[in-house]
Length: 313
Image (cartoon, rainbow, N blue to C red):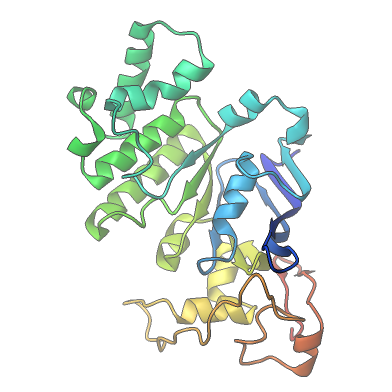
């Protein structure tokens, strides 16, 4: 049986030109592979600048891939019409303040994908939109309001409703709660989980908060400088992390339930213009050896299907 979404060796390089120097190549994505099944949530984690949002945009086709393959239910995306793929995969954006058109009313924002893809009467559009608003916890009398009249959490609900208009199978959630107040984050997160259970949705969940990731994800993909550091089931990643970077991320995440000592990750993410030789993490890794500085690790697969790119295992 084909996976709902399968990404194989996905690569995205940017050429950055300069008047005084030769063009440089930024390897934003460098051989990313993963699979997503129906009803699963794959969390994509890593520091800012590691390629998480570029991965989402490349899957959606907002950015054109340099190499690799993307399969939707066993078919290459190039073999599927653009409109069919977009109906299947939708995105919830990070910032609910800038992702909504301030000149449109709430119901018009939600109805926009329907306008573009379906031939429906105004009455049918309105009926469908009111149904969607109810499903995400918005009252019908909110339909005539403009975005500035809503709170951040309500705006994000509008964004979620808009993403659901075409009955997608996959939602790409690009840090959907990071711009919200802490008191509202749990409400939106619970809504996403309720919708997933009711509609059998699959999520690509991009996030920084590892406590949230542990709560919502079934699998985790840890990225570092455009590459996969570790990938596997959420329980294995959190209870027995193998890659030093995964271990460092978990140790740098505060938790009221754990007595583990909080330790910030030393150093900074290297410049993508001048990536280090060998293992990309060796400059910040406490376990790095001379071999790590010279040789780039390959992803190794264990019996549980977990993948780890480390030379010291």
